[in-house]
Image 1 (cartoon, helix red, strand yellow):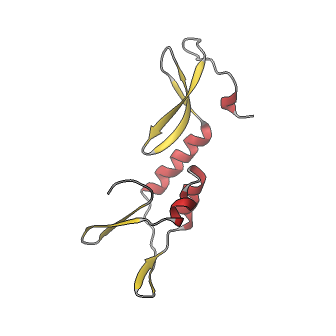
Image 2 (image 1 turned 45 degrees about the vertical axis):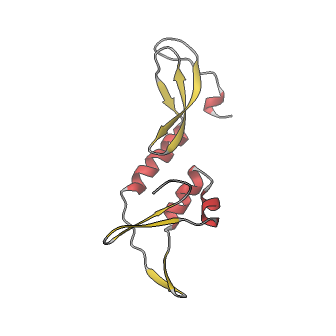
Image 3 (image 1 turned 90 degrees about the horizontal axis):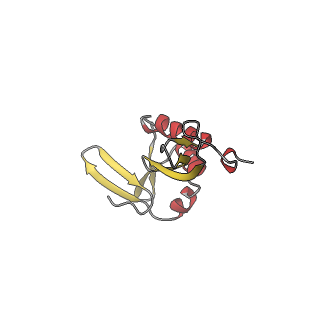
Amino acid sequence: MDLFDAKLICKKCGLEMKPVVVNKKGLNLRAMECSGCKDKIVHPSDLHAFEHYNDLKGKIFNVKLRMVGNSHAISIPKEIVDFFNETSGEMNKHFDNMVRLCFEDFGRLSVRFGEEEI
């Protein structure tokens, strides 16, 4: 049984809390919200995933540039792939599709997965 399957009562106003989804920096976090005071409690596992995201976000990975046929390739570190698989479960689907590569500036490339516009 999950913690959020139980009936939660707000400590401040005594009303029953209802499930909601909170979007923080592109991650959908499950939460419970009080209809009275609007106080929110984020699910502990989602909060952990958000903290993991913040740890990975600023990290710099050194990867090798390799030749594959007439193209160059880089590998995406396992740590990043594991994070996507844990949080959304949709990363494997995105790997099966084409990704968007954008030459933003000298020395800067961006790789985007999914339907997001560049």
